[in-house]
Image 1 (cartoon, rainbow, N blue to C red):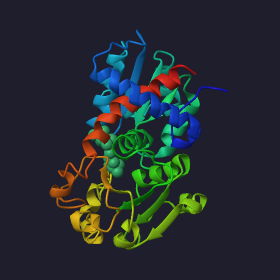
Image 2 (image 1 turned 180 degrees about the vertical axis):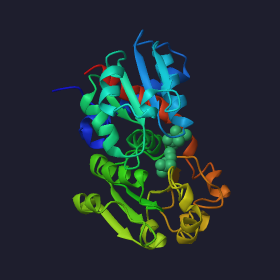
Image 3 (image 1 turned 30 degrees about the vertical axis):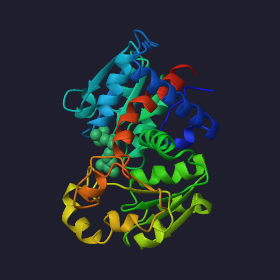
Image 4 (image 1 turned 90 degrees about the vertical axis):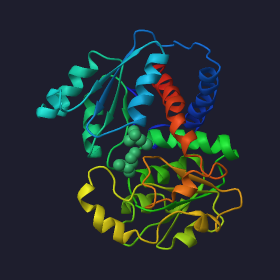
Length: 302
Ligand code: CP
Ligand code: NVA
């Protein structure tokens, strides 16, 4: 097999994903107990960010430092990629100097092209289409809070965006049902809906999606790159806010999940986000560190 990349969740088998999450649990314990785990000394990660980030940057950079390696932050303002050097050229050059690369960008085809020309593993740290690293952290967080994900029913309420697309793939990989409630016109990608139809239910009613669900998940109504659509989206998504009233319709021990950053008063109320009995958003965020370290280890050990 050639160089392994992690561009979407289906780049790994369900068994591989399970072992990555298992390892993430171990690495979390090690981190909390301050057990040194400098497993990759002198290894270098290039982090290419064409969009903003807090969690992704801090988790990858801290993770590489904890592994005894190093991470380079590369923004389009300071690199030739930002001045139009072809992706294929940048990929060949950067991958000749580092051990692993993560990219946050716009079009998914950009990361696919980068990966084709890269001689080292490439990790998708968010594209317009997918956000697989967040799903590793989310699955770890759900397991910690409520046990196995397999066989559960999860409800996605909101935009059919990159996070929703990764939840669709997660439903197949972790074997759960995903019920998606979006306003008309904001449904996820039609080809994904068709491909994973056996796992999915699509509705325009948040109440219908949430009914009896084990987890209710949402995300911002306007993703990065959609800033100009903010006002029209706010109007379209009225009625799709996740709050305590909606959570009443879910299973009695259901959790609330959000990849963050959250916009309180829009897709979620402040009260729900801050409710420690229901909201597991801080664990999702922290687990970015542990899950991605497990992913890096998996890719570097191929
Ligand atoms: N959830 C997430 O990816 O957050 P950042 O945009 O802060 O990296
Ligand atoms: N859907 C959001 C996720 C941010 C982590 C975005 O793409 O902006």
